[in-house]
Image 1 (cartoon, helix red, strand yellow):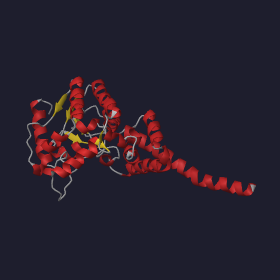
Image 2 (tube, one colour):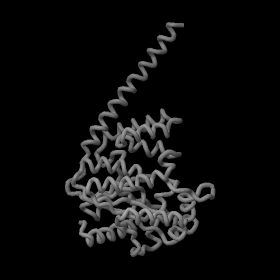
Image 3 (cartoon, rainbow, N blue to C red):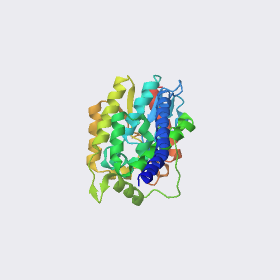
Image 4 (cartoon, rainbow, N blue to C red):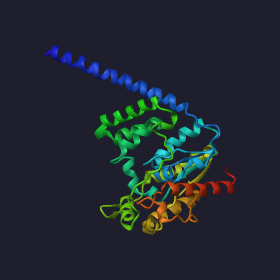
Length: 301
């Protein structure tokens, strides 16, 4: 019996110790890699946010800007990413943060501590402060081994790719489909973002908290912050529940920061994807040119 137990211990040691050593190396190497992350010296503007800015702002038309937005990136993740970028890139003078009505819906909590937490948060794990790392480990405690594997996998990938492909970053990306925008496709999107079991969602307290943290961070770093509320189809806007519009408006007002609403940019239906709150490739061109003109008038470029 003792011999059997000893063999089990040795076997587990052979299996676990290399994994611990690999994890430690990946953690150390990523920490060093991220501390040295640099954006081109000619870049003074960064665009950050979720799939709305990712698909709407084509930085090919903004030579002094870079779009680092990524799908499913709630404001909490934007904050931890922004902390790292501003710390190592003093050339950044302006941050354009994607933010809309849905940003403050509890729908986004699914990407923080809900169904999609493991998939999304593992991208940003290495740029999180230790206190947040522990919280996300707790959020994913029921599938911890899978979560840790995702973190290590992203870490290994980061060591093999160019800086533009780091897991916590993103880039301008288009999407095309043969499906046409319709009332049905927009209503489906509204249901996803603002309702659960046909009941109106509450607000995401974490996204609201980190929205304020982004504002404080930019003030501390002496960086101008501008909110970008990317274009949405009129039918989508008309059907957003009033309480989310009111909350967005109140947060923008109390923050006393500029917000670009694109109200004067009257995009045709063909410039929208079926959900009504993302734009097509051509829609992105028109949106970005509008943004470039705005920044030029504000003497930010």
